[in-house]
Length: 456
Image 1 (cartoon, rainbow, N blue to C red):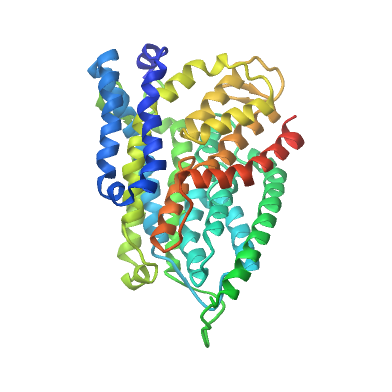
Image 2 (image 1 turned 135 degrees about the vertical axis):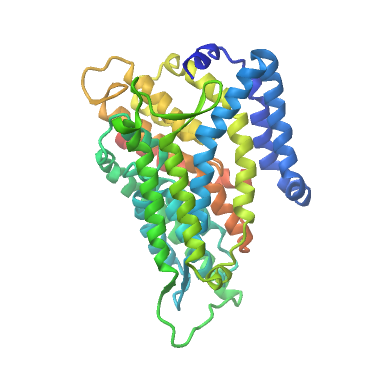
C-alpha cells in the first residue's frame, strides 16, 4: 500500500464529515428516535459510508476508493470483529451462579480482579468473561449503571496496559521491537489509577446501595448454594486459544517461514494492492474454530442462564463497519500530519494520542505517534524498529492510547459491547454524551494526576 499511501497525503478535511455525522447519529438518534434507530441503524451506516466513498471515488478514482475500503475491511475490521465475535461466543458459554450478591465491597473486588486479568487475556477477553457475572450479581438492584461505567473504565481499557496481550496498540509495539514485558513498568501508573477510581466507585456505589435497600430492593437469599459456582468452565481453554491467536498475529510476521523472498509476509491477493496476510488468516481461523468448538461442547442451558442473544454483537458489527470505513480520511490526515504537530514532550504525546484514541482506532493512532517519536533523532532510550524512543515518551504514547480509549463508547472495542450487553440485561446505561460526562468527571482528573506525576 506504499503507492496508495503516497497518493493520499493531502486528504481534504471535509471528507471527515461523514465520520462526524455517523458519530452524531450514534450519539443523538437513540435519544430522540430510539425505535427508529433500532430498525434503520444499518441504513444509516450505509448512507454515511456511501457519503464518504462516493466523493472519495470522484476525487481519487474508483480503484483507489475500492482499495481504501477493502484495505480497511480486510486488514482492520475483519480481525477486529472476528476477535470480538469469538470472545462474545466463548464467554457467553460460561455462567456464574451462587449466593454472592453485588454490594459496594464485592463490586470493587470484582472490578479490581478484572482489571489485572485484562492484561493477560486482553481487555476484550476480560470484558466478555466478566460482564454477565457482574450484571447478574447486581441484577436485584435498581441503581447500578455506574458499576458498568467503571467496568468500562477499568476492565475494558486501563487493565490492558501491562502486556502486549492486553490491548492491540501494545501488541503492535511488541511487533516493532518493544520487549514483551517492557510495559510491566506501567504498573505504578495503573495501580494509582485503580486506587483512585475504585475508591470513587466504592463511595458512589455505597450511596446507591443504601438507596436500593431503603427502597425495598433486597437480594434473593439462595439456600444451600456455594458462594460462587461456575458452569462451562472448560471454555477457558477456548479463551486461551483466542489469546494465543492474537499473540501469534504479532509474532508470526517476523518468522522467516511466513515471509517471501523479499522479506514480506506471505499474503493472499484480494484486489489491487490489497492483500490478506496469511498470519491474519491463521488468527481468524483459530478464533472461529474456538468459537465453534465452544458452542459444540457447551450445553445450551448455560446460554439460557446467561440470557444469551445475538443482539449485542449484531449492533457492534453494524456500527463499527461504518465507523471503520468513514474514519479513514481522519486516519490519513493524522498519518500525513503527525510529524508536523510539534509534539516533543511526553505530556503532549500522552494527551494527543489519548484524545485521538477516544474517537479513532487506538492502534493506528499509537503507531502514528510511535513512528513520529522514533523519527525525532533521539540518541538515548529504547531501540525499536522505528527508531530510538525515550522510555518516558513511549510510556506516554502507550498509556494515552490504552487509558483514554475509555473516554467514549467507541474508544475501544469492548466499550460498546459492554454497553449493549448491559442494555440487553436491563441496565439503563448512560447515553453517548451521558457517558462522556461520566468520563470527563471521573477520568480527566485522574489523567491530570498521571501527567503531573509521570509525564512532566
